[in-house]
Image 1 (tube, rainbow, N blue to C red):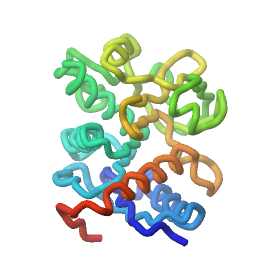
Image 2: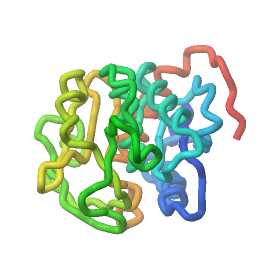
Image 3: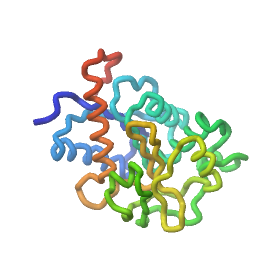
Length: 245
């Protein structure tokens, strides 16, 4: 039987038929409804409409940058982080999770993304030496991390559609303020960031929603399960807002 409570998931992104993941994500969440018997209620929220997120049990910041509103994307990450709401960021979601953390936790308030501010003096997100658009590549997981536990293996092959990544000279800035990098490519560049103090917080440079078969990637399954767990703790509390379908 389905769960007795509904997990409300916000898909934050500027929905476009040109972005492959935007078509795949709702279908994958539908598959989880059937396979895991999860009651998932999914809402699309454009980045320029991110205002009130109360009542959501999961926030997924999707690919599709440059966003209509960088500030809206940053707000979504911050809200999930500060309120202990399960968060997943993929591709551009990874970039903006790092921007949010650097600005709001590390005090690096001027950091920018090279895609939208290529001439900025302080770039956190920079062009990759080799574009990963349409590529598959190996990812190695750090033992003992949430990402490693979710994947259940030391190594996997993941799909990308990305041309930007973290300036690796800033790794220590983020690490020293509590962000954990839990997966790397074969050259040592970071591919997953997580927050150990948070119930579920994962940001991946790769796109688990592009995994080849119709079975949801373990990261997506774990995110949905975390949202369901969050919903189960919320059902006895009064709702502060309603979100129309």
